[in-house]
Image (tube, rainbow, N blue to C red):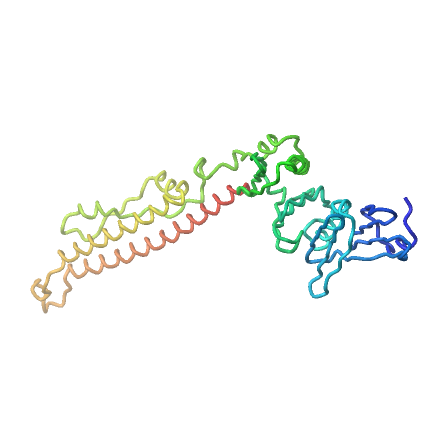
Length: 360
């Protein structure tokens, strides 16, 4: 179908992506960057072409009994409005909204609007790659939400006496909005078709199956997760220290079995590690108290009375005190190091669990 000469001149090199009849010989032409409204010559008016840029920040619609108005708001640059018949409003809004959403980057260049739904102050734009939701008196402005189909793993509909609830699972969270029952069927068909087409499946059951976690995506508690050997268990056991003879000056260290070290480093959950860190701290505190108590029982109250006064020799008890102090300092340093390693492992496990929940 040919275009009026005035429209061809206004289009220049741009392609027409949508053409909507507005009644009589009046027409709306949408290009990637603007909307052209052609008014044919009448008894009281000349032939005209009006241009409306798609670089708008807000779209509002007002409706009367027979006439409607579409207003494009450009912020500091003002706004523009054109009128049309109410019966042509929905068809005219489709290319205008698509052009604005593409112009501001909400929709991708290869993405198109499947259908526009207006439910009182709720606007839903179902596109080939997402749903754009806006709530407010305006049809659309920059305060909107979007649900990308790449993040949608389930879709359900809950019927009610007046409205139908649409439940979309997006990144593991349920997003809800309602549609009047008289328009819920069209919304369901449009939304299902766009979502299933995006995923390349034929039913919602297949969509759910496609998003079921694989064995590799099981939670960390259901399979072995290793973060390396991890910190070595403490070499001193408070119980063993307390059972040493009163004249002992050094706690005997024993290496734990290999499987114990592996278990401590590779298969603890975040909560278990936190408990282990607390238990280790309690053990160290008990060990410290026990060693200090033993040191006190081994140290004479008066050095001068131990038989070495004035001899030039140092009491063995003093040496024992120094060794005990050195061992206690080494023990505390080991605990501090292991506590830091346990904290780092707990953060790694929590990060892994979060990523597994997101399906990465």
